[in-house]
Amino acid sequence: MKRVLLITYYWPPSGGSSVQRWLKMLKYFPGMGIEPFVLTVEPQLASYPLRDESLEREIHPDIKVYKTTTREFYNLYKRFTGRKEIPYGGFVNEQKADFKQIISRIIRSHLFIPDPRRGWNRFACKKAVKLIKLHNIETIITATPPHSSQLIGLKLKNKFNVNWIADLQDPWTDIYYYNQLYHSKLSAAIDARYERRVLESADHVVTVSDSIRNVFLSKSSRIDPDKIIVVPNGYDEDDFKEKPETGQEPFVISYTGTINDDYYPLDTFVQTIEKIAAEGRKILLRFVGKVSPLAMQKIKAVKGIRTEFIDYVPHEESIKYLMKTNALLLIIPDIEKNEGILTGKLFEYLGSGKKIIGIGPSGGDAARIIRECESGDMADYLNVNDLENHIRKIMNETDNDRINPNRERIRNYSRRSQAAQIARLI
Image (cartoon, rainbow, N blue to C red; front, side, top):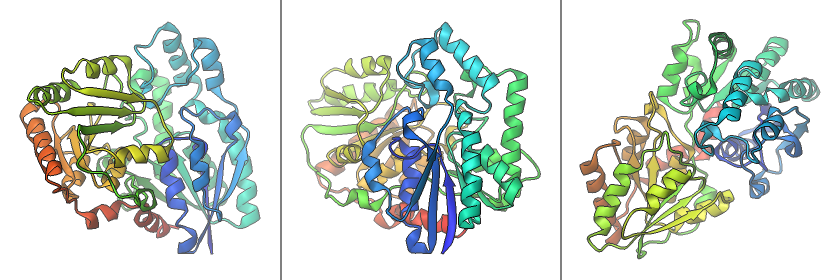
């Protein structure tokens, strides 16, 4: 069997979509003639924004997992700011940054380039060297986030000339909250140099959308376009064996994940829902995950509907909420270059077989995939007429049990199919 070493900071009991991407794909590797090894951080020492112990039950028994110690900047961050939580991606769990948070971000962007989890790299590199030698590993995969993990791959590539697959789910220096990190010209230049070296040196670069692929290609003329391939996030068919509920009253619209004030516009949606509810339609809006206080206030202010707010739940429980809803709300962050944003929730929405109410760039990658799979549509942020027509159409289809997504096309985004794509690079 071929042997591959996945180097990833996020692994169960960490929660979130970043964990699920490789947890779900790796379990198919043994059946494809690949023996997987995983190198990760010791959970008791890690800085996880979310924990989901239930995911530990999904680790395939043939996967050998090794853990190392680390040094964590975020322990100092919590002491300095007095906060119990560390920041989520995009600072979605923080309101407007106060003085201590701004100082912490400045320290982060100047002393911990590209990110604070770089404190794990030295320990991970040392262990990876031993594993590569001991097991004659010829391929390594470095998973982002965090981007600092890609620097581990850069060192190992220089030392062993292994086949290096750099998986970058998110943009690096173009990520939507980059300007909230308060980089100086010098620290931004150092970060951009790291990004460029990784993109030029990796044998294969995997990312989740064509738009992000184009962003990476623009970083250097020395990058071979053929080595950057798109493997979007996906869904695991094993998670969706239960038959979905239909024909519920009230009409349930669910959202899973995080919503903050700066990037997730809700005004058009709540106005439209309020208008439909005023006609006598019973509607329940259910949000599962982290919702900022201001966003929660806007949602609760909608007249004539019921609302539910459920904090972060284990992944298996989140899937149950998807299956007992009528329609699913997807909001693409309202930022520059957002056409390539393909959130993990999109593919689990598709896997559920439910119709999707999309709000975001109507010409973006997410909109294309939703239409391709006949699973709904996407309305631009301020397009009230399109959004209203879209919601009414979904309600009518659901009431008359005419929900017929294109299952064959949806299966193209299954974890098994994506694992086969990666296997061809190993």
